[in-house]
Image (cartoon, rainbow, N blue to C red):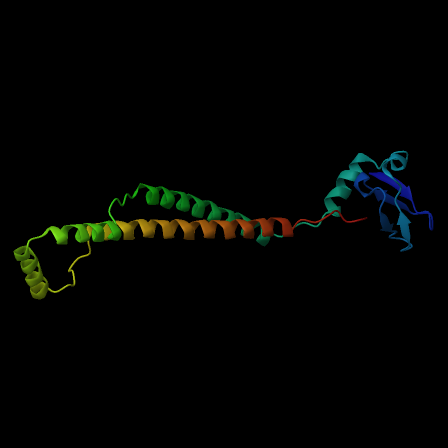
Length: 182
C-alpha cells in the first residue's frame, strides 16, 4: 500500500497497487482523485506494514456464515450425488440384457411356420384355456426394467450433482467482494 496525497485537500489516501490507474473518491473532501499508474505509484511512500495489515482486515467485506455453510452443504450434496451417479452408472453397465422383445418375436415368427398342425392346435387351445395375459413377465423384461431403473437413477443423481455444484459455485462467488477504498 502506498500513501497518495489528495490534490484537492492534501489528505493522505492509502492506495493498493491493484488500484493503479483507477479513480477514487477522497474520504475527506469527496472529490475524485486519479490514482497514478503502477510505475508512478511505486515512487510514493509506503504505508507502515502494521497499519497495512490492520487496514487490509477492515477493507474487505466479509461474507456471512450462511453463504459459507450453504456452499459446504451444497458441495457435500453434489459429492454424494456424484458418487451415487457413478455407482448407478456402473450397475447399469453391468446389467446384461442379451434377449429382447424383438429377438423373442423373431424366434416366434421363425418357430411357428415350422410347427405341425397338431402342435399349432394344441398351442391355440392353451391360449384359449389360459388366456393371453402372462401371470409373470418374461425374464428378459425384468432385466430390461432393472437396467432402465439403474440408468434413470444415474441420470437423476447426475442432475442433482450438477445443480448442487452450480448452487455451491454461485454461493461461493456471490459472497466475494473487492477491497473497499479507505
